[in-house]
Length: 305
Image (cartoon, rainbow, N blue to C red; front, side, top):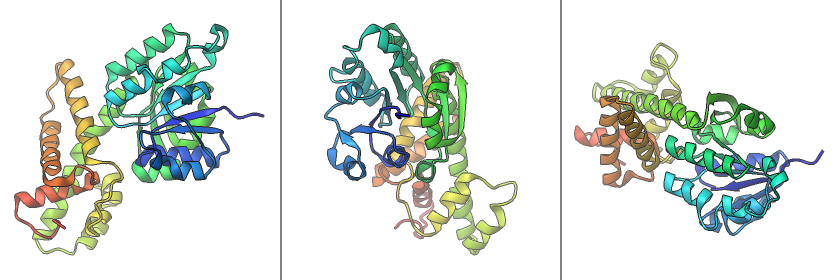
C-alpha cells in the first residue's frame, strides 16, 4: 500500500527528530526550512527539498509544521508562499484529502483561525503541540495534544503513532494548544523546584548525586528531575528545549489566562526568571539552565559555567 505523502516544515530540536523518524518509517517526505543547512541530515536520509511551505504543500497530502513562534506559524500557513497558497489549485473534490497539522506551541486563537480558514477552503487542520523534549522526539515517545476534528486525527493516526505514544484528542480547534499551555505551566513550576532544590543541596554541602538518587523515586520525583537533574550536575545546558521558546510559551499561557480572567502569579515569576537568564546570554540554552539565573541571585559560582 502506498504511504501518505508527508510534508515537514521546520527542522529544529523537535521537528528534525520527528521528521527523521518518519523517514525511518518509510514515509515519502518533502521538507522545507528557513535555512537549508538545517535540513541536510534529513536530505541525506532521503527527504526531498522544497523551497517554500507552498512547494511542500503542492507535493504532500499531509503537511506538518514545527516552527518557533506564532508569527512563523501564520507565515507558514497564510503567507504568500504558504501552505494555503500551495493548495490553491487542488480540485474541490480532492481538498478533503489535504490536512495541515501544526505541532508548534502556538496561540490558541491562531489555531482556531487556521482551522476555520482550512475548513472554509475545503481542507482540514489540527493543532497538535507536543511534549517530551529532545528525548521524546528521538525515541518517538512524545505526548501529542490534538485540537480539531476527531475523524481527521483518526485519518492520520498511523503517522502520529510514529512520533508519539500518548496521543490524545483534547477537544475542538485550539484545545490542543490550551492543553499544551497547561503542560508548560506545570513544567515552569517543576523547573524552579528542581533548580532551587539542587541549589539548596549544593549550598548545604550535600552529595548532589546522592540527593538525586534519594528524591527522584519518591513523591518529589518528576520527568524534569530525572531528565534535567543529571544534566545540571554535569554542567550540560544544551537545549532539549530552548529558553527563548519557553519564554514564548509562558507568555502565551499568561495572555490566554488573562483573557480567561485568571491570575497565575507563579507562572509570571518563573517567566521573569527565564527572561533574566536570557538577558545573561542564555536564550539558546536548555530550560535546565534556569539554575544559572538562580545561582547568580545568590552569588553561587558552581553552576555558572
